[in-house]
Image (cartoon, rainbow, N blue to C red; front, side):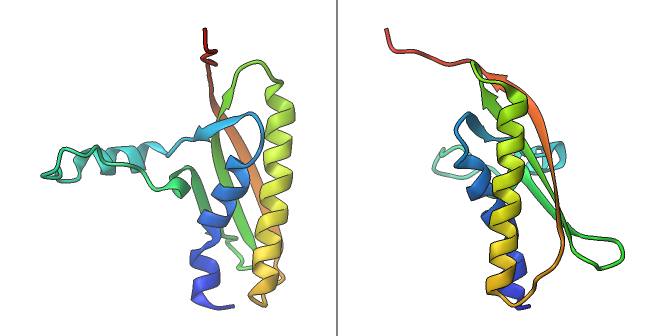
Length: 125
């Protein structure tokens, strides 16, 4: 497995999760938000943006037998959170397994989906 294949895992997982209908976005963990807040301010007043994969954590299994992926989602209201979370789980699992396979590493993958919030819909009046 190439290093490029493994370093791209958070992006692959984030893209798959954000593509699920009902996902408003991914929420970074507290440590990532604090690090971004502590970063030096930019001279051009552009607000500091989190990378799209900030809501995804990828770790090797302790025994080295595969990958553990954690996805933290904010969902849109009006849909069943359980259904959306299951869909995120299935799509992220499939995307990561496919990515690993293209890089010659058919390894087990476990995915945990955490719903961190429900975003209100803003309908146009």
